[in-house]
Image (cartoon, rainbow, N blue to C red; front, side, top):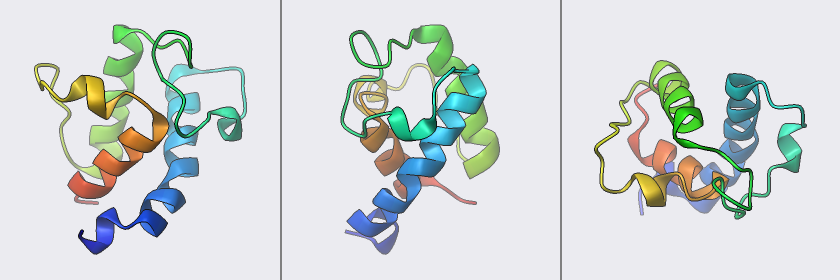
Length: 94
């Protein structure tokens, strides 16, 4: 496991990514209310594919890597806040 992907780094990234989601989607909730392991789609946060596109755009600008819409891992990457933070930690260039 690389240092970027360490549990401590991922835990530190959770509030930042939560803030990014809340800001990008103009959600009426504090970022701390996003459960790290709750689903982002459906019964969890209730995101849809348009929301994911908006989040992906903000992530690419902030962290310096592209999330492609045809990536077969997108369901896993966007499955929860923790999964998204883990992916960002492993891919970021900024």
